Length: 255
View 1 (cartoon, rainbow, N blue to C red):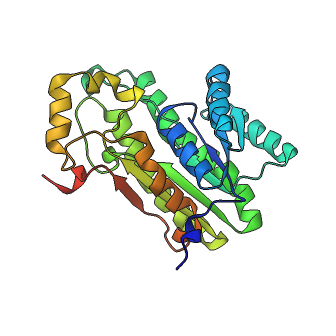
View 2: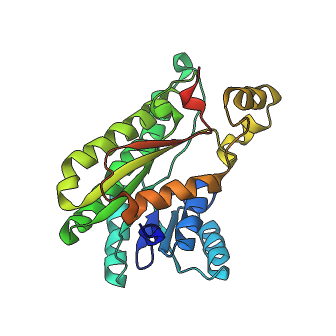
View 3: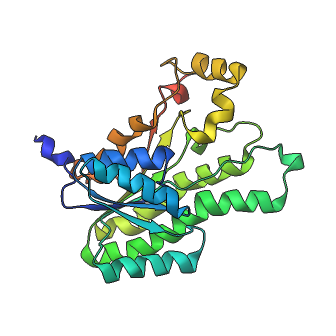
């Protein structure tokens, strides 16, 4: 078996929500594996800064600024890529937000905002990209789930429901699109050192809980998702479809 199974040279990957955090780390890892990457976000200035950083490292990078929850904007962005000759071989649905509040105090609009951003957007973007993948008979979709794809925690109900939905959306993609040479899988990150978790990492009690609850005894680093993302985007996973891989330091495996 050759290590070239993991080579992404000649492939183009669109990573949503990739101007920073997990998305940017995944994009950098894929670029290092040979892929051309398309960074996505809504903050054009931040996108260009991140793209510039990767280009300085010698990587091939494009940017696509659009709101993943806006169906018309998604369609227009992909049409622009078609016009520019950018063909998406790999899609990583990473865009997401968090909102913490007990369910008894949770407003419906906040619930819907999290569901739309974390779940519905993955459906919309994947549907439009998959239409193109079907035509060429190949494609890789990697959805970013969470520990909450399988476990619940108080005060994050909409996030938990959305990430549980990501797990089942991934299986649905495999069921419908596997016949067209598309593999759809998911990654379930554990507690990672990101901007989204800054309030948690700076809380000594919660920080201690994470470290004590995780067999690895620490938080994960964003770059530690890259290897799994590369695997699920490469020829090495051509017969892997509909699964979620937890990158969590062992947390989900223990009581």
